[in-house]
Length: 390
Image 1 (cartoon, rainbow, N blue to C red):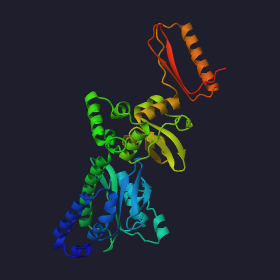
Image 2 (cartoon, one colour; image 1 turned 180 degrees about the horizontal axis):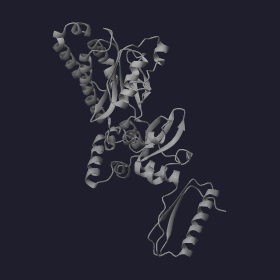
Image 3 (cartoon, rainbow, N blue to C red; image 1 turned 45 degrees about the vertical axis):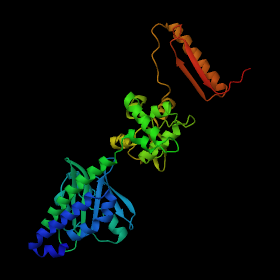
Image 4 (spheres, helix red, strand yellow; image 1 turned 180 degrees about the vertical axis):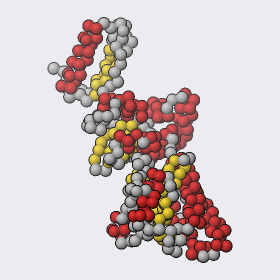
C-alpha cells in the first residue's frame, strides 16, 4: 500500500503501521547500511510516499555524516557532510531535532529552525534535480547520535504529514538498534586470528593445540605460534590480515622514520595505544596497528590526523616492538646502582665506539643485551653480519 492510498483514507492507518512492521523486520535481517539502501530503500520510499531516501551514519571523526548514495544496482559513492547548520542533515544531527520542511529553498522557513541553517544546493545544480520537501530525523542509540534518516520530496506535495513523521521516527529507532548490533558484530577480537591460519602453514589440529596451550599458560597466542610451533612472522601477519580484512605491514629496518608524522606522538603513547603512523601519501596516512579495530574505534588516529584518511594496516606484536625501537631507539634502561659514574661513562663510550665501528663496517643489525655475569655491568653482544677483519 502506498502513501497515496492511506493518506487519503485515514481508516487504513492500521495497514500503514502493519507494513511498517514488515519493513523493520526486513531491516533487522540485513547486514549493513549498503544492504538497507539496496534492498529496503524502495519499500521505505513507497510506504512514506517519498521520491528519494538518504541514510547517513556518523563518520569516524565524529564531526561528519557519511551517506552511501546509489550509483548503480550494487554500487555506491560516498557523500560527506559536516555536522553543522551548513546542511539540513548536519543540523538535525547537531541539534538532535526532527526537521520537516515544505520548501528547502525557503530561507525564512529554514531560519525558523536556526538563523544559520542552510540547504546544500550544489547537488541539485549538478544533477538538475529539484529538492522541495524534506523530512530529516536524527538516529539515536543510547542518547548518542549515530546517523540521520532523510526523506526527500513528498509525492502528495506539501510537508510530510504527522503520520509519516511518526512512522519515520519509529523506523529510526529500528535503524539505531540495527546499526548498533552490526557495529558490535563487526568488531573482531584479535585473539581469533589463529582461525585464519591456512592449513598449508599449520594443520587445524595444531592450531587448536596452540590455542589450548595459550589459554593454559596465559601466553599470547602469537608468541605460542612463533616460539612453540615455529611459524614465521609473515605467516602470522597474513593470518592477522585475513582476520581483520586489512593489509599486513611488517617491520623493515630500512624504512624511513616519518619524523613529521610522529612529531606529536611519543614512545610511551605509541606503546600504550599500539599503533604507529608509518607513511603518508595522496591515499591517506598508513597506520600500523596491533589491533586495527581498536585503533579505528578509539578515534585517536582521526584526532591526530583530521585532514587525512587513515589506512589501517595490521602488524604482529614483534613487528610493532621493532618499529618502536626503529622510530624512537631502544627503550632506555636504568644503569645498575653498583656501577659508578666513571664506569658508566666508560661503558657508554665503549658502546658508542662499537656502534660507530659497526656502522663503518656496513653492518645492518647490532644487538646489545645486558646479562648478570660475574662482574657488575658485564655485557654480551651479538652482531649479525660479516665483519671484515684487517
